Length: 375
Image (cartoon, rainbow, N blue to C red; front, side):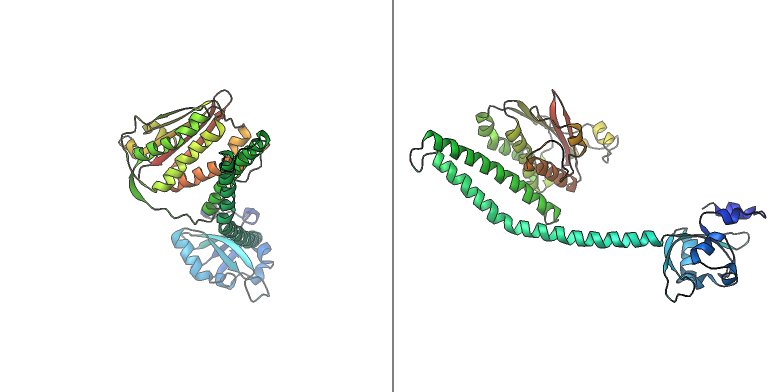
């Protein structure tokens, strides 16, 4: 606060009264010896009613708070009394300094009553909205089992009928059953991602940290998707040859969910194109430029870098700018599961103190890059 510079060379002019904030000049015992016009405006009173009285007459617990502010050099939101009112009705943002030469204390106050009232209203509205959101999430999570169970039945029985368990089917029956099976599987995928996202929003995910073999997990996930990629004629490449540290201490189920979400995006959007997943340790410069805790002697093998590229999927600039805004309505219609998956990746990865980025461009496709610490 530079207000002391003004009082050191105070001149007989009107600058004191032109200052935008209220200024009190106090003796060491808290007695008021001068105020500017802004104080009179804030308190709706005259100098006659203020000068000679004590600061604590105008600010609740004024002496104690004043000592604290002067000693610590901080600011405080204080409650202030207005004329003819028994209870404090003003909210003031207060700072103060003591002049070591004169012993006088200079107090600066700014009226923030309206702002405090607005903040209170906002907090109350937020609290109500949060209760509604929490209630909605709890209801949907409680209902998710029954909903997904019904969809699994539709998927399973339609697949069984297509496989001939109920006898021979006509061409038209096969066509309609195939549509039912595909749509029910897509809906099941989208809803599963959406319900998991609601669970993440509700902060009901409990992480179970344990030591596991990361390369072993990657190999097992690759085997799960081999047939799917082969049937869809997707050219998939996986490279983890540069990954030298394989012991990972995170939640293995969540890490598996992250990697399977990436593979699901490949499976759903790489129709005849190429997709790749490269896994290794990030370069030191990469960690530095993205503000990870890295220095020249830092062991980059404590982190794992994942680069997932899919040629068939391209996001517009507007989509990229809002890629992790779960409920953003863009001009391009995307499956619910895609946005939910990306937002779940963001939630899980940042909870592990990692980070994720998405790059997309025409004639290139989309690159999902994320970093996880091994512990």
